[in-house]
Image 1 (cartoon, rainbow, N blue to C red):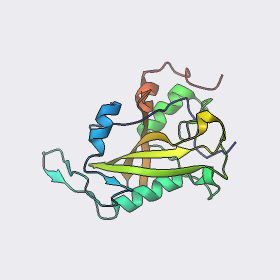
Image 2 (cartoon, rainbow, N blue to C red):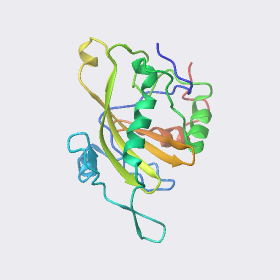
Image 3 (spheres, rainbow, N blue to C red):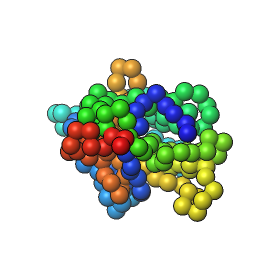
Image 4 (cartoon, helix red, strand yellow):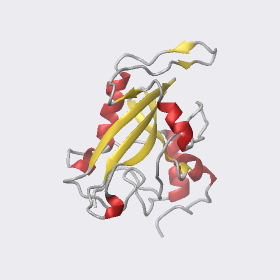
Length: 199
């Protein structure tokens, strides 16, 4: 099994989507909202930066910083690098997400929410970015991936939503979301301490 430097956590995933009102709102969108969220966003298909501007605390429109789209895509590539035999991955969590994760899961989970799996095939693992929506210092990224296994349940692209937070050191993962299970961070904050850990 491919391992990363970041602790692994419990199950999650299906068609994902999130509408995160920031800061501090962990709400996840449902599948219908998901379709609406991608309207006007950056996608692999159109490859154009048409994301709607976010608003700052005063209600003024704020535009993504130049180069944000490229840096977001690079960070998603870094998240999956170790799964695809492309070097060490970067699954750094935001302080808030890391605190919730350690509280709920201790040393780690019996499931990997980054690949929605317990194992994967590095030679055939693939991922792609479907859309990016900027919201202040956050980037809501719709991603699809394949674990590389041959079983019928593993074929096809599996969806996932990342909430990335911009920091002075670059992007970090502030939440992982799915349409089935919603926000992982929110679930971890609501869980009993240690209840989502291995064993």
